[in-house]
Image 1 (tube, rainbow, N blue to C red):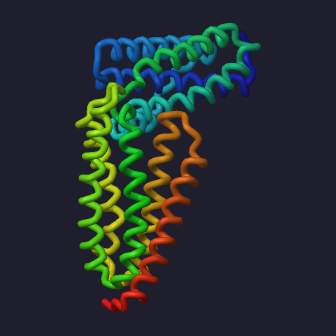
Image 2: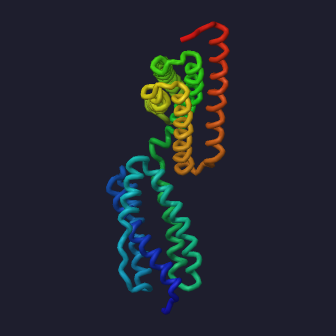
Image 3: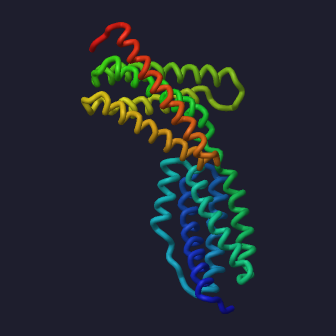
Length: 290
């Protein structure tokens, strides 16, 4: 069958994508837990290789996989979990399916390949139930509370104390105590409900998310001497944490990014501004000069 150069270029791109994803799924099958999950990923890898063979019949050309893409998705799954990595890959699959839709009129097998790619998505959904996402609620609780409470507290401390080392000390003590308190509260909350989540793990994820946020937000006060510069850097780091966390959740959970990002940012900055004002008024009222 004769195909024009534009169609051939599109097929070559899909051919490379198929062989690349074949290697990605093979790598993931070697690191995923559970025989059932390994089998699903192995089957998907085999089908990707079969698709590569179909496209090769039209191009009559061998195509090498994208080694960078293989490495990227392997480490994304390693660092951020399978749900995040697979969801990220799934977005690429959606773009590929649009190309298949255009090729259906010229390539008889394109329709079957498109159907099999859609079945891949359903098969992969079965292995997206990962522990990290089961405790997303606990992580959100710890992260959100730390951002709202500590940005506000640091803003108040900054104007009231005007000493970076003292602000860092008070901020760390406040943050560590709050992290332990939040973890304890989450433990008791999960213990009293029947959600299937383990209380200890829920408390762990809440505490770690809270404590990690505390360390990041307080860090400028440990390295810089001007307290207003430290406060500005803390605000920037807070926005960065909110951005990265919401990006992760939006991809892994298919949730809207912009609305949640704006909500968390607005809440954190609103509390920080109010606390800054309260710190200023209390300093004037009590006549404290540090």
